[in-house]
Length: 312
Length: 226
Image (spheres, rainbow over the protein chains, first blue to last red):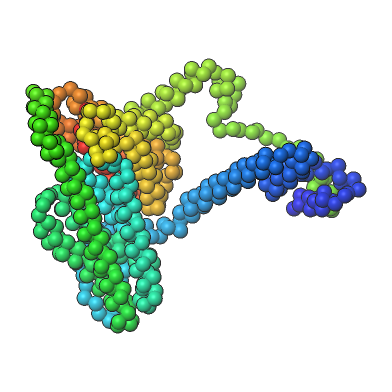
């Protein structure tokens, strides 16, 4: 407790003209003052130097510019690092949402496909994020698998990134939208519950994607449509029932329910067709290039002969 | 000001004690690492890394991987795998894509690199969130070292791919090797990380780990370019 008093006593005298004995402490004091003045002081001194030397305004400007830039970069960097550190330090905030037993996760995954009839009683929604995060990660792996197993020949770093982005953005974006609508339409549900509900709902997507990839019928999409209607429909129905049981207004809740159902079902269609059409188009492109294009018959014939000669 | 005087009186008392720096030589007999030859320093680190690889390949209950973590092994393995899995861009070797560039569809260096490190951090973060008693870098170290069996299976795959023309039998052999590497990696990391999780939660922490190694295995098995 003894330390601060002399510091505070000396600081004002530094700025004033000063005539007391304390002035002798000044240089040490400024040095040990730490980071508070670090950012401001160099600027001031540089300014005065520039004026004294009478250097060209362009140089001065450039110098100041570069200084400002470094300062900004440094501050942005430290802020980012601090933020990351704080997030990592505050990991305990998220911990309650990951507090589950394996048995519960299994049960919730199963029940995400079994809709319950909405009654007057509110249906329970878990406030848990472990299951949803794992479902999203599984989905990313499945999308990667789908691309690879379809013999996907593209610079595929970007597609892999897009798979990651698609899954997480759908999860967070759809949850945000539904939350907004639910808030406007007075549905009694909080953000974490929506995240959990939609995340578990994506388990149905995973099943459909997996089966659609393993039992691969390239041109006939009937099998996929069946799965889409059955599994996707069940998981959608489950979520719609939850919203229905938790909403008070009769007409408003239809908006939320319709949005949720449309988002959920269309996303599954998108996932299937976006990647499959890419795959099909690409395979067509490759086929047409492997078998030479019918531009001129003679050229094609010569290429054919070459390729046949090269084969053995 | 009165406080200062009070303190200055008390400050005259002598301060004594031993300053112990963890890791520094405690007595004069012990060789300080400051004046030893560079070769010895490097060899000691290399030996430590090699010993950890041995531990991964022959997993038994040991805390060494956890206590003295380093990121050398993971870095070496990651760079090695990324280079081996790198898609070829040789002209004439592969089919041309639309824009005239050649690419056989193999993963790029950066992709493997990102999968490796981001995957490891996601698995670690998950185990932290589940209440695991393990530090971030310890877990990343173990996960990184445990890719070693998969890296070996990748070498085998490359040899098979380079050696002969491909057929079903060779694919089955490659598949078996990769599957063995996958099982081995998962088993080894489970042996090291399993104890840090609260009881009954083990399977929750192991699932993303399984997914992580699965994706890497998939990259290896789908890499068909010799």
